[in-house]
Structures are given as C-alpha cells and as structure tokens.
View (cartoon, rainbow, N blue to C red):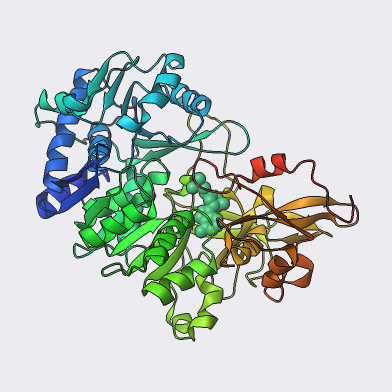
Length: 542
Ligand code: AMP
C-alpha cells in the first residue's frame, strides 16, 4: 500500500522560492571583483535568477544542456546557479585553479554551451576557449562599463543580459532526479571525473546541512562560505543559506587574512567554513596585528585533515569552536562531521582532542562502512585501517558519460580514503589509499605525522611520503616548509614528534623544502611531491 501524501518534487528552485517568500529581505553581501562591497537580498537574487533563465531560454538552452560558471563566491554567482538549475539545465562549476589544458579538457567533455565568468578569469579563458568548440558565448559577471576588450568572441556583460529580460519565468515542473549540477574531481590519476548531482541529491543534502548535527544554520546566524562554489558546491552553503534564511557573506576573489578578517568583523559573521590553509593565513594576520573576533563563534574545517594546532588555536586564542568534517565531491560533499557527543564533550579539553582531530560520524543519509581488501568489515577498534566506503542518496552512483560501475555489490562507493573507526563511532582518515606508507607489512598514516609536524610554531607546511627501503619496503620521510625567516634542524623536528607517534612511525629523514606543491583544491599534491623526490634516497640505503 502506498502512502497518501503529496508528491512534491525536491527541486532546488523551491529553495530560492522559499528564501524569496519568507526571508526576502535577508542580505547577501559580496566583496566584488571590481572592488566595492555590494549588497543584495534573496528577493533580488530570485528576481535576477529568473531573468537569467529567460536569457538562457532565448539562447536556446534546453533542459540537460550544460552551462558553466568560472567564478568566485558572489551573489551574482548564486543567481547563475539558480537561473541555470531552475529551467532544468545543468550548472557546471569550473575550478579556475586547474591548469588551462585540464580546464579545456573538462569544458569539452561536459560540452558546455555558455560560460559565466568573473573578470579575473578572462585571460585564462582567452587561452582555453580557442580549443573549446562547444562554447557559444561567454558572459562576464560585471556591467558594461567594466567589460574589457578581449580576443573572446561573443562576450557580453551580465547586467546588460539581465536588463534585456523579463523576470517572469516558470521554474521546475520536472522530475526530482533530473541532473542539476556537474563538478569534476581533480583526480590525481587518469582524466578528471564528472560528478553529476541531481535536484533530489542537492535538496536532500540541503536538509542534511541545515540540521544542528551538521551546520545548524538559522536566520540569526551570518555565514561566510570561504569554501569556493566551484569546489564541491561550497559544502552546500549556497543552498543551505537561502533554505534557512541566513545572511551570507561572499568573499569574492580575496581570501587573504586581512580581507577575511575585515569581512568577518564588518558583517558580523558568526559561522564560517574553509580548508585548513585558509585559516592558517587568517591566524597569521590576527597574531601579527593582535586582533580578536567579536562575533565569530563557530567554524567548520575540512577538505584536508585539520591539525590539532588549529583546533586549539581557534579555541584557546580566539574562543571559536572548531568542527572537523570530512567529505568529497562525490558525497555532495558532506560525509562525516565531528560534533562531540556529551560523553566526550564532558571530558577535560586535552582529553577531548583525540576525538576533535577525527573526522566524526556520518549524518542521517550517509551510510558508512570500513572494509578490508577482500570487502570484509574491519573492526571498529580505532586502530585497524580499512577502506572507507559510503552509500546513500547524496553519494555518486557513477560518473558523467561513463558506463563503469563505481559501486561494490552492496552499493557502496569506495572513497579511496583509508580510515579507522573507533568504539565511539568516530571515523578518522589516515590517508588516501595511494599515499599510505607500507613499512614492514604495516601501514603508517602520513596524515597523522603531518598534523603533528605542522603544529610546530616555526613550520608552515608539512608532508610525509614513503621512500623506498631495502628491509622495510618503505619508510616515512618528513618534508617541511618553514615559515619565512625561521630555522630548525632535523633533530628539533624529530624531537617535536617524539612521544606523540609510535616509535616505528618516526620519519627516517627530514628534508627542508622551499615549497610544498598544493593542487587545485588546496590539498598537498603528493603525486607531484613524489615526482620531485624521485631521486631522493634515505640516508641508510643511499
Ligand atoms: P575533493 O573531492 O576534491 O573534495 O577531495 C576529497 C578528498 O579530500 C577526500 O577523499 C579526502 O581524501 C580528503 N579530505 C576531505 N576532508 C578531509 C578531512 N577532514 N581530513 C582528511 N582528508 C580529507
């Protein structure tokens, strides 16, 4: 027997309709690429997104067509999302930090027909677009006065496009499983892979993100999403913000410490989300200028492992609560979140740290399993490493234009991460499967060593890779980038680690580097690092 409740397709146009109807005056504030801070509201975003939909329809964009954005976090960028998605077209977010060849490959694979971009990226597009025959037009998110002369044909300014259209446009009316967004993962092996979100998956992820067990946004909060809209949907904030009627503050192109601090204080930001490196920049600025936060209460940190030094620094120096989360493009992206249950929150702060540095438990809607190489369950003892597997309505079932199955026989997606789960249910990422160091048949977690190494006040970045070893197969080598002007010798680095990790995990060598390469999503690029270190030999086996 079926239930007798209404069929109300979960399509994301309803999110911005809701924001317009019930939180229409709530502000969205942007540091514009042109310079000034600009203010708008959910009502205005809704109206302009409708105009944008009409422009797309006038250009012959059909449901299912891909329309790309290459843009910073801004109210304009939000309008393009809703305008594209509302008519059933697919919003393809492009990551400007990719190399031009990768970007060209992705645009061609997606067959993008239109690209909305910020002024910042016109030089990049000038290089890429001659190789992208499917792109028919480029719209710059600016006004006519700021539109420069470029070699890009059919370039238009956004404001003129909107001005020419009516705000009367029907949205939705299609199946909730209709494709809605497309985002390619910056896979370190093989070609990039397109994750194709549906309206339903984004809508369910929004419900999940709004709960207190995840972000818990309310109209009295002010959220600063530093996480870019071009990488894993800004962790869902461009949906959860309007869905909750929460003021959003968009950082535009400037994510340096001074710019973020000014926005946080100037706009009364209470909650923010970003990868660890962003916070390190903000910290350095605040320490150098002896600054304090007056409104910021909570931050969500993920994307790569959050070092203990950052969690402590936020809490002890600035009174800000850090929640550590794990996720990936394929999980929309939130997969687990580290809110402490009362049994752990009641412990002394130092004892809580064991859990605060872990990535936490899945919210409702994400099923998580830890499996060994044979697909068998791994003990939740907090020590045994296993492959992290997930399934649920916000997890990818396949990649765009690929027939290959990415699920195991129980429908789980292999995240490519290696993790442990402890008896309290807290998951901890120990490595990407391809970065794990295998020493004497046992696994060493490079992430755990890195997180302790980067906690030394003189260290800016730390990376651990495996180096070939005659007896043990591989041994860990610590690669360090020091903060400007600092010096530290090998023995001092090792002293900092001693007692904090198992003896047999102690790196065999410490190498100081001018630079540790970061990939397009701000994570340490271990593939490139290993390539740079390919002629390196451990002192013993040299
Ligand atoms: P992406 O799809 O580019 O967002 O990358 C997802 C990957 O980032 C995951 O599979 C993890 O390897 C890594 N990652 C994300 N969040 C965390 C975290 N909190 N700690 C450690 N690694 C993380």
